[in-house]
Length: 66
Image 1 (cartoon, rainbow, N blue to C red):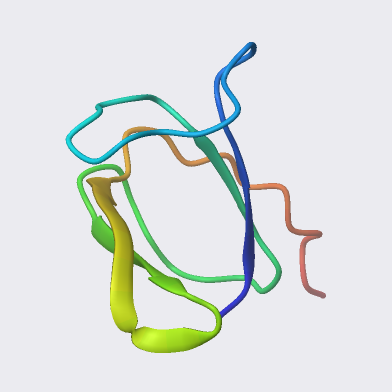
Image 2: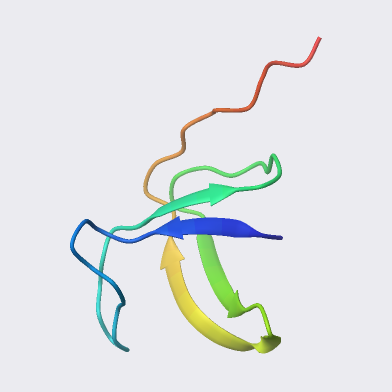
């Protein structure tokens, strides 16, 4: 699934081992809640893990279904 990651203001990249709060905007609606673990893979090689983390906050921005 594709997502847009936004790094903290003034940050252009994160080095291995760095902890940071990032914003992740998913392109599709997905069921998740705070505490859900996630992994970010390299889009060119899905077998390469770029980052891992835990969801801390979920904002429901999807339109309500009728």
